[in-house]
Length: 226
Image (spheres, rainbow, N blue to C red):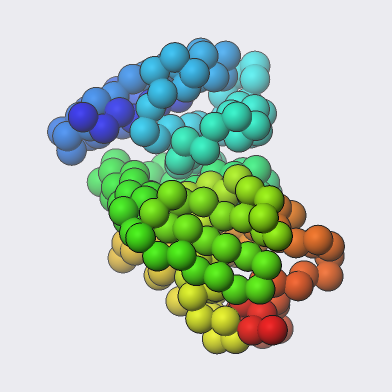
């Protein structure tokens, strides 16, 4: 059974999230603070983490930052409506998606399923995409640049693979959201910018002057075709 770790200090919200996820067929572990979250990811090895950013003491951004040092477990953030900066920072740290409070539990379940679906779809593939010095092995969900392995989150991987499969094609942010989210609910187009920034930091020799993932101003992004 697929296991979801829910990190939420508000008891009522945690209960609702737990119940909806269980009714959707997931095994659910609930913890209420950042230290327990890190320990549970290490010990229970959940398939996905639902992480509230507004935790007492050690906040969710710090928890996500630490987990990303040694784990690519998918992360769906829970954020307050006004915390746009936190959403962007969380995505740049390596979170895969976010849900804004107050939220629909059904939307959260849809987000969780979408993240898991794209993770598993990528892992089931057998395609190797090569573009310049970049090699993307979809069967292993692995990326290397110039022969050096690069760690990407599932969302970053899917976004890079989408661009690299069609070098030179310009993708709008909306098209990229459709490619990596695959769920018909409102999404945040600036999330694509945050993920691209993170990809560039990981694969580009000079992230400030990108060689691979190129901005097409006023439109979106393309993968360099030469």
